[in-house]
Image 1: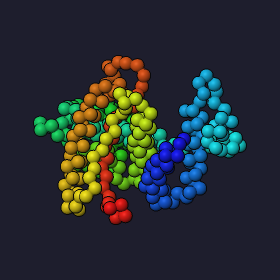
Image 2: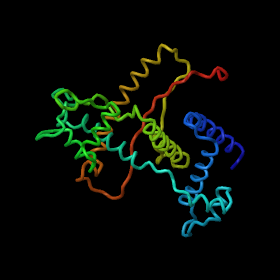
Image 3: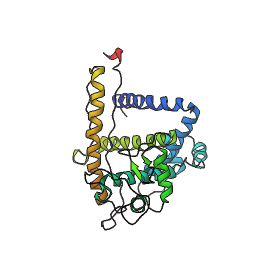
Image 4: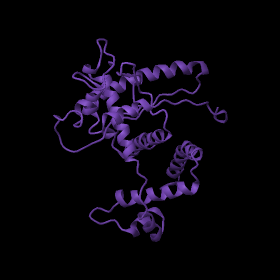
Amino acid sequence: MNTNHFKSLSAAIMRLLRPLVRILLRNGVSYGSFADLAKWIYVDVAMKEFKIKGRKQSTSRVAVLTGLSRKEVKRIQGIPAPDDTDRDEKYNRAARVIAAWRRESEFQDAHGNPSTLSVVGPWSTFSEIVRRYSGDVPVRAILDELLRIGAVKQLDNGKISLITQAYIPESSEADKLHILGTDVAHLISTIDHNLHAETADARFQRKVSYDNLPNEALPAFRSLSARRAQKLLELLDEWLAKNDRDVTPSVQGGGRNLAGLGIYYFEEPYPVEDA
């Protein structure tokens, strides 16, 4: 790696780590704990993704790639990875239920808004949405989760009303940290792909920002960006649902892929030292 390349990469890593370290310190994660996690990822990625074609990956090669000793590589390979698969499943199932409730006409009123639904019954019900879009998870479990995060409310007549546009964890810090691990990873994977992909194969990666906005302009921009972004996400959700085999079993084709589009809003005071 040449000097300029290393300097650019180092600067990028410093910017990337600053908000991450802020989260780690706020949650009581020491440097030692972070270093152990980083070692585990170094070994795992080197072992799985940097093999020589036609050859089995060795401890010695992983040690060379990572700069760790063979003894340390073997020690780390014996440590199980932290697993939050259950939380990921819960997130995906709840998100699909809300999206379908907003998207599917049979669960909407005459104005195209999400209907107030009975939990069970002969017609379009909350139970029916859960059955179609949440797999074999009990209806009560999904309902409790949506009530917990304030996505729905149960009316005096027992019916369920949707009061949010998307699944956004509000009461559980663990749920919000789960999003950190998925959404940021997707963004970095896209950037990694674009760093070495041909132009024609590059993935969409854009942003728009200005750096001399007055305080008074921010609330209007927050509102505008949220409305427009939500509309786009709902449009893409409808298309993806029609092409996803879990949601639409009649869809044919080979392989199994994860694809989507992430949108995030950012604002911060412009650094005085850079002005």
